[in-house]
Figure (cartoon, rainbow, N blue to C red):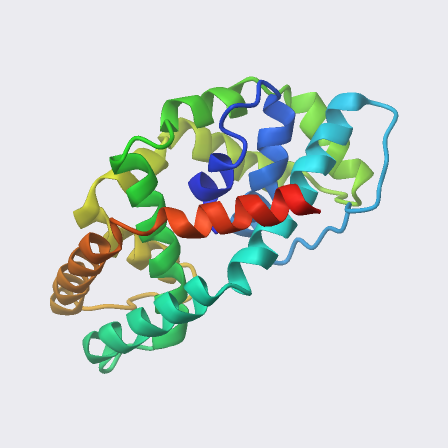
Length: 223
């Protein structure tokens, strides 16, 4: 799941460090895909750092339940088939695009139906002290934290996730993600066709997209 979908499960918490932990695995991956940390079983003397660890573990649980669900299998496969004709000549694989597109559509639906507030999400991130985050990262085994904080400050400053509320920005967001791997993943014509496909599919998901959140929430509370 993407940033805002992870936030949904802890949208009522007052603990900013827990919220940060729920999105930190993806923040690190975006900052530098070579960063690999496994703090899952670590325990610190500082409660706020332990909150980051708890949030990290919840992130792993949510992703595991999401990717093993029938909802993910069915929806990502449908998107793969729908998007495949728009990818002729593109280096991007339909399965990869279907996976990422589904996650972006879900975030868009959370925002446009008022299930979460992006401002509240960013407020949580702003409430976390940099020295605490750095202490966690070093404790988890990251020797050089500079590359992460350079990305993290830009992520907070740009507040890019606000654009996920604009349905016609989903194709552009997909392009931005793919550009981390490929220089020119899509032509303007492909992007326009993807936008049309994704907008239509988003409308089809509107009435039942919350089922996956209900399913995951049930599994989280049943552990």
